Length: 227
Image: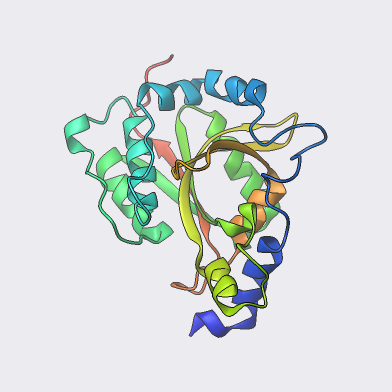
């Protein structure tokens, strides 16, 4: 089983052992919910398209992937609302997410796995600022928000390894080196994270597939109208 392989445990527990971004400043004196920086991200063309599409949160645990998918599709003006599927519970791999998005959104998507290296990862993240692209990510949530207890407790360690999640990337603020994430879990919402912290969260191995998690970078075939 992938769960019991050392690299699976290491890539999950190492970043999950760091303090939650809620408990520390992300970069200098920047808070992870800094309103000025978040407002700057929402004012960007892609941020405006997401707002116009009316971003939504998952209705309950287990709906993160279909909710992230709906947010992407709703941000593409050329996609009719009646073609956007209702969110249904069930895990999706990054590959399944990509296939479903391309079939409905007429996008051309590429998976950028965390194991591909930081430079390629950062180049993909920067695509989020281009309104002709959308970026979603499958990542290990505890790598950003920590573990709910000491790692020597079996149930805490298990939750840290299995805590996969999908969310939308709204923008990348290059000067501050901060990724703007819209977390579909309403308890978290939008926040700012240093790019290398996000990279470690995506680099964590998915126990379902045995490979690193991934960004889903989608190019729009039908270009959106300018906002």
